[in-house]
Length: 449
Image (tube, rainbow, N blue to C red):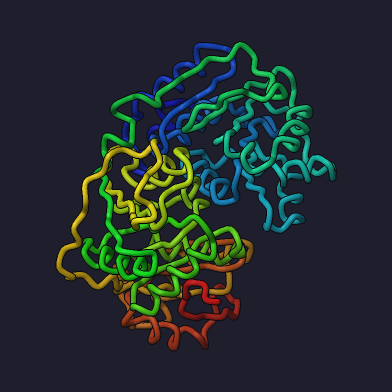
């Protein structure tokens, strides 16, 4: 596939008209040099496109073999990269995504069809190798995205085993937003080319961030201080980071009681609840996401304006990746660090911060958008066009222009609609069939315990 065609697809599908310096240098390096590539670049700078472009360019479309393997540390990142890959690739390039929590037999059948690109988490790839449901014998490029995170999550033994099954002549592309002190010997880099954009002024997130500290009188008043802070900010997409799951649950419950449109995201939630949280946050059904550091990487979340450190981060890496959820690419963002007297001495990696004074309470943190859950998805051969036709043919409670973002998952779909019309839409559609299938309909809610 030519670079001109890729750029056409980028513009049409995800609105990217030009590559940034990092993406262009990576693509040029991959074309002109033969060694492995180690790419360091800040969170939110566009590393996904940087490694996808050379991968798609080198695909032999008529060769029905797995030619590219992209290994990522989380299911969320796998799904995000899959969506981008499918958006910018021609229809003749087949892409499969594999991760824990996904139906293994569905994955095995998809792998049997020999897709050109496989996007996969380390544990699930290791499982497919052991069961003989995948062969890496013809892989030409192996991408290890956010490799440092894979090691942090304890995948070192799986990674070592996986690399043993990849051909020696395979080219490696490794990416990270933070420098890796010592590369494990099992990676076996071949004449590596280091591309370091971490200090590039045009890409560095810190140059587009405004940072403040929020003084809190005591630990017992932290929740009330958080609510005052939220209500003083414009009704823009906000992520509140906590250090622990229990704390995130406590904050989420408090915000719901105070009528804040919020979702919850952490590792103890099941896959559907995590998918649903991201979808509701992205489509405008929720303004606030309460999350652990699991949400600091890999999620496909757009237009986040505010990051709130409800608790000071535990490391510089955590601080960097949390803040990287806003000010992505060329946007600006705001960061707020909440401090009690107990937090008087902040970590040395945090800059000196000015006090933020909460303004008069002028905002509601409510939304006029609701999400309808439909119990059919990709595996039932449901498309966005099917859903739009189903809604418009079955109800007069909504016009075509009022149908918002549609997310289709394996066995369910989510549709954003005006909240004041949601109940009427469901009532009208319940007796009807979607593509000759009887489906269940309900208003999607954030997870509740």
